[in-house]
Length: 68
Image: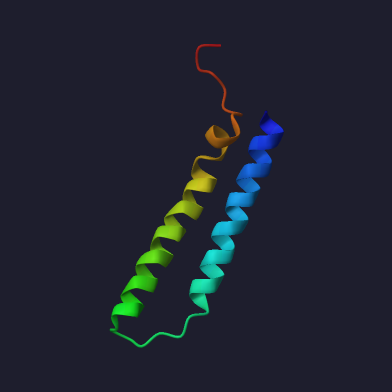
């Protein structure tokens, strides 16, 4: 149901936001392997966060069928 999709999407968005906040709080040494790993993870989460906005209508099933 759409309501369940909305709840699931909100939960996913909250999880991504929490993970991004956690990564932002990590103290990094410039040029270290850990810094590269954290930056890669943060970039991936940013991509996922962007997709929530771009694909929101599809994810919630609220898109309009072009044939109707």
